[in-house]
Figure (cartoon, rainbow, N blue to C red):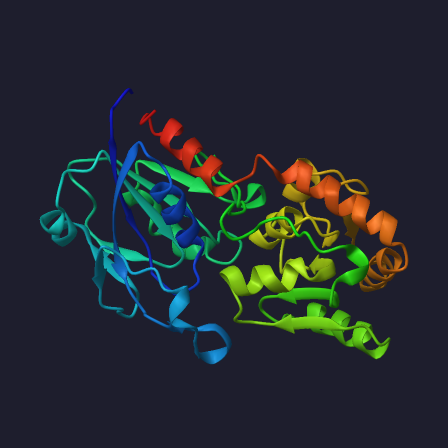
Length: 309
């Protein structure tokens, strides 16, 4: 489909940190797309850790913010009345969003951001969509189109700090699962300087990771998280637990160092810290390997698969 200017309406739960934010920003970066956004807007509030308030600078307010309900919900008949123009495509980035109705005058593409934890919830949402995009191969259902996570060229830029000059020995910004916490505790007991917290995002997270010698991730299930792509994009060596999509998309021992057990993770991090040359080499290789995997590429894929391009 050839158009001078596509019109895309994007709906999502507008937390101050949300996977949907990256889709939204990738759409805004396109000169061939006009964007309108809507959805429950929480301002600075996010339910992490029982409830947190994040900085104002993290906010991206939708064109049409709606009230947060329980469960989070949008009404497509109402949104269609609020639209300034008729969209060519509705893009719903679903991290727990329910809806009244569905768009009547344009197809709906639904991205399932968390199929590893919301599989049952998504069963009730799928019927609203003309296209379903799922972000994890192990959780694909018949008819789903795979669109993995990615990294943002705006927020996940390659470090320029030399390995030896970086402040943190290791870092993970994210939910504090038991296996992650145990690994951090052992590293700290060995005298390592580890940044381990939840909350920093965007430029704040970028500053921390760019100043980290070894990044690590330990997925809660079989999911290849967005953090995987981000660590590789920062150009720091990444120590990652082996899960299917990771092993399919990147090369263990070249682009990252893989592990299956606590002991392997600990040895891998310490091994890289003891060998700055190897750490620098793995970080650079990971950066090269992840280059194509931007959120812009994911949006391009969605527009192509839905016949918009």
